[in-house]
Image (spheres, helix red, strand yellow):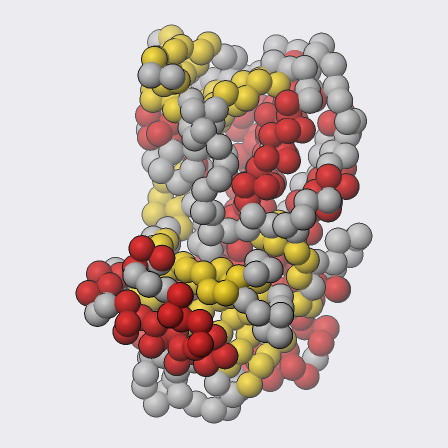
Length: 398
């Protein structure tokens, strides 16, 4: 996304992608209303809507032992997108990459793994990357690291993140979906389990929350025991758990929550998970990274085009995105404490209560309250917009 914006600012930009394609099993596939609005602003909304894999969600519900609770109603959102889009992330990445390829100033190199930073004295002046079995050097006015929570670039620049403890990890797997099954996104809280189900059309992508560090114990108990846990928590899917033939079908996501103290150095900027790894709570990771890219593009793009980029410019990006990131992570940490209590009490009489907790009763009784989680998840704390100079379909290099 940042590469597309910079190219539209007239900046010659090269995106180095480590993999040969985007066809990997991403676990987060939610594109929220704030990002959908940006796609419209960039002239990509119709292309996104035309993707055959897109599904839209207007409400989020939780299934408790005591009954079903409506948690969030996205129809309260302002603007044209009163929903969240569920789309395989490889299709979303492919769409943005193709939009970049239409820009004269944009170059995408696949199978290009950055291995180290190039420096002149203390300033970052480029990167060394591996491509087709050979090492290549690329000199640049600015290097931007978007290489995830295990960022090679951030590590090489000693931009070490502060780690926040998390109480859980997530086991991800798929189960077939049938036409009569519930649609939309579903949270399932039982006396023994916490799960989230994402409707992907012909199957559910399911996340099963476990206590931090208990993956080995779970796997040692065998796939049969795991299937029994899932069938007990989701009786309406019990006839399909046999499709999990082994733990090869179950992938562990080690949940991490972190934030770098500084997101920049001379000639270098880090954004997205490289700057702040997000918890899966709320499914906001993709959209927060997009917000970073928008802010970076708007602030850095004109300065790069005019060759007036300074360290203070990079600092402005962090100042712009620090507060919404910190607040979102604070909300996630609060949710973690609730989940920790639930996971710690799994199987006890305390967890087996058949009465709805007060927040659930309030959400049931007062529909307007469902707008609060809708705003926090659908739009985020500080939604960004595309800069005006990027709102054209094809730009020319300055």
